[in-house]
Image (cartoon, rainbow over all chains, first blue to last red):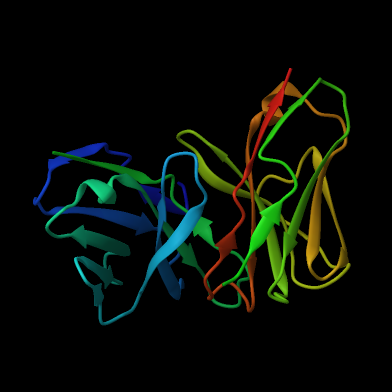
Length: 110
Length: 113
């Protein structure tokens, strides 16, 4: 079983729609969680960290569900510029490295 | 702003060649990482380094080696390139351990013929 798994999508949504997707992780001791955004042929960039209490950054909301071992990302009022691949990343305690999911592709259409 | 640079954006090499990929970061970060990214497989860690001259194997180190002689520079070496090493290679750095944001370079797209 992969350490981190994501639905690859693609999620094709119209502008203004809400889209949400999850990322599951296998290590119950994982402590840090992140969402990265990767545009086509570009490097990943941090979108947001995911805190236990959940957090919101503008139109983006991230949630953590420890009991079911998944994190989620919700995008409200989608913009064309939100089209990208969203990677989740997870690490464990005392762990230098992050494990990344393969990414969920979102395409927002006009 | 943190800047991570990689020596080449695109590289074409022949099977059996020795290939050097260089990565430099300008923020005095302790930790540096090399990943490869392939469709459907995501980012896979090849090697990482948490200090000068220190290195640790990641998930897929076979066929690769690394060098970190200076804090700001982390090199990935393909001793004898093979076609299955055709991939996008991404370098990243972070100040502290894995709980911190990783900053990525722009990537090197390597084609091995």
